[in-house]
Length: 277
Ligand SMILES: C[S@@+](CC[C@H](N)C(=O)[O-])C[C@H]1O[C@@H](n2cnc3c(N)ncnc32)[C@H](O)[C@@H]1O
Image (cartoon, rainbow, N blue to C red; front, top):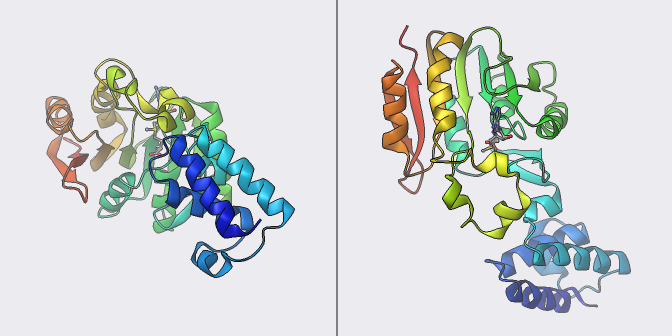
């Protein structure tokens, strides 16, 4: 079959499955199946697909029709200029989380703790940008830590990163100049209304802590002081409607300079706070 015809059929299938941007996704999956750079697709649209390419594309469109995220089908996601392995065991790194990394990089740090590291995208991006720094990433999910370890190895950062299981701070030792976290923060009711991609294909534990979605912030604010060096910073990603609640949680816990950073859409996205000691 000619690539262009396969693409047309695929777009129709994805549209029928309710995929939000069927043309974009079909193009990405076609270039992936053909093994070509995305920028070359237009040049190759009149080529005949080999049997292998056609089978790969068909299988990819099947998966996407079931609303599996494109990143899972590709097995990777670009984040802060690097490529991270992703799977159904981790949260698919989101572009808005790059805001947290950019904010953290405005500060000096020798060591960093990432709570709920998932794919390791925050911790490993920070370490890659700061060649002199070391870091610790913890997660409740052993499966997620395996993905993070693969990403650390892929980026050549395994010597500067320690990854281990922990319920937030439970098994963490030492003090850090910087603590970062993108905890699960969607409230239980909202989780039920999410699109199929996150609801069916990403770990629920990575998306919602249940109830009002604020429990991880209460735990982080109550404990971070004991793990920060004097004048160290803690930074957490938040849901865009949680700015007031989360800043109050950190103020009540005795932090100084508590502030909110907005994302490119002008929505509250990150809360930053300085150690009170
Ligand atoms: C929103 S995801 C963030 C993953 C990654 N840091 C990112 O930004 O893409 C939250 C992560 O927190 C982890 N998590 C949830 N509850 C936890 C707990 N009690 N202790 C440690 N990690 C937890 C989840 O397994 C998940 O990997």
